[in-house]
Length: 347
Image 1 (cartoon, rainbow, N blue to C red):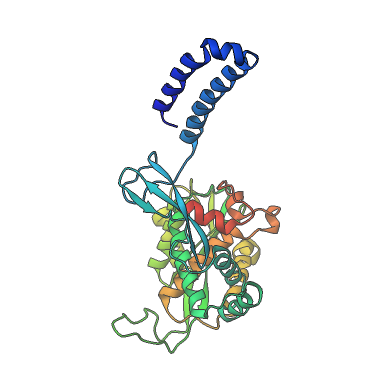
Image 2 (image 1 turned 30 degrees about the vertical axis):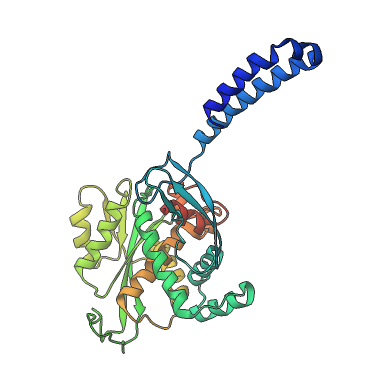
């Protein structure tokens, strides 16, 4: 109700409520009428306060949030979407919740992400979605979801820095690839074409189980430097020590990034590198159902998505049921659906 209407009500109160006719006929409800009127005025003030307290999404055109109101619900195949109207630029929009433009429901997409990184093949996921959700998709659609959200969430998790609490173990593992690879017209050949393996360089904090990873087509010093640079850039502080097997590429990378900050420990004992070997065992459980990667770009996105699953989604028994990110002090306040929490926080 506009302020001008309140002025009319106040004038009506002065003229009508204080008249002789009203006092003679409605004297028994005079006090009640006054109370109702003042209650209405105070309710209007409270309603304006509540409207100011609401947080609507910012306009995707002008960036305003104070002049945004609801503008109905748009129905589509994935369900109802709340739409908003920006009074500043007179633009109606749907906020990006991480699933904007997707034909399928968010629950279906997140179920596919979780099943894939837990070890199911893309074709088994297609069968699962049809049996339990009544959704028909192709295996290439599932792989497109994996790549899209790996790329999306990687930008967000790179802004989060874990707190390293002790030693970091570093090692590399061979991941099988297809020797005969399909060449697409206009695209560069695979950097590891003709070779049987990709090299996945990994490092893990022993105390929190938080891991860093880098997939490389080569086993060289530059790849080792890339891994060690990730550890240095995406951690709050340098680790106390870095344990590795003594391969010269590790020593070179350590001397470049951690020479005066951490202790360099070279060991050949499996007990000293048990955490990284256990990490590689978990990784191979996921990769063995793929029967080899086909392209380096898609393989890199797949392993980036799996690493996000390992650090932020998968609960670890050695950590008392917490994720490595929670143990490393990254408090994103995950709900029951941790995939949804990550996707919403990214947006």
